[in-house]
Length: 255
Image (tube, rainbow, N blue to C red; front, top):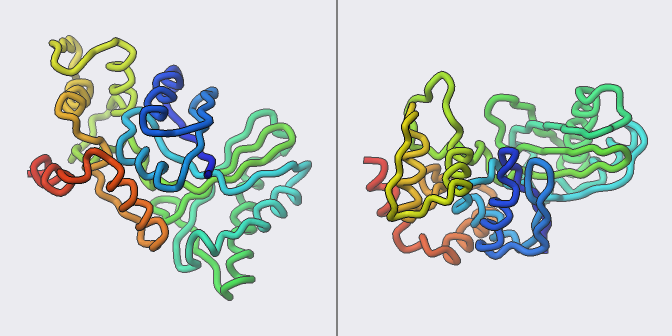
C-alpha cells in the first residue's frame, strides 16, 4: 500500500476526497490544500487519468524528523532514488514549508537536489541534470516544524492542463477549479447549464467532458518511459471504465 497526496484548489478538498473514494482510494484524509490517501501504484495513475479536481498526484517515498539542513540532506540521501528513476533524467526539486525553522527554503531545495544527485553518483557513477522548465522528474518536499516528507510527482505537467487548449487566455480559470465549481454547485450531467460569464468557456468545456463521461487525463496522453511506471499506467487503464474507448476517444476529440 503506497501513500499519496493530491493537491487541489483550496475549498475543493472535501469534493476531491469524495472523488478519490469513488476511484478506490483508502485512508483518505483531507488537509488544507489537498487530500492524503493510500492505494496501490496503479491507483495513482488512475487518479491521474480520471480525477477532475486534483492538481497533481504526489507519491510519498520517504519522511523523517529533522532539525537543520544537514538532517534534510541525510534524509533525502537515504532514499533509493536510483530505484525510481535513471540518472540520465532531468530533475527539478520544489520545497514547501509550514513553520519550518530553516532560514532559507532555497538552500533547503539546493541540499535536497544535492542529496538526490549524490545518491545517483554513488550508485551509478553519474548524476541527473537540473531542468527547471521541463524536467523529466519532479521531486517535492514538505517541511513542518520538525518533520520532512518527500514525494515523487506522478503527474508531470499539472493535471489542470487537460490538453485540449491550443492557446490560453491571459487570465484563464483553471480547469480543475472549473470542475470543482460544477461539483459544488450540484450541477448534474443531463441538466441545463447557464454560464453568464463564459469567458474562454472553461466551465462549459468541463461540463461537456462530464456529460460525455470523458476522463480528463485522456487528452494529455503522457506515458512515462520507466517500465515499472509504464506497467502501472497500463494497469490503471485496464481497471478503468474508459479503457476500451481510450484510443478512439482521443482521436475523436483531437480532430
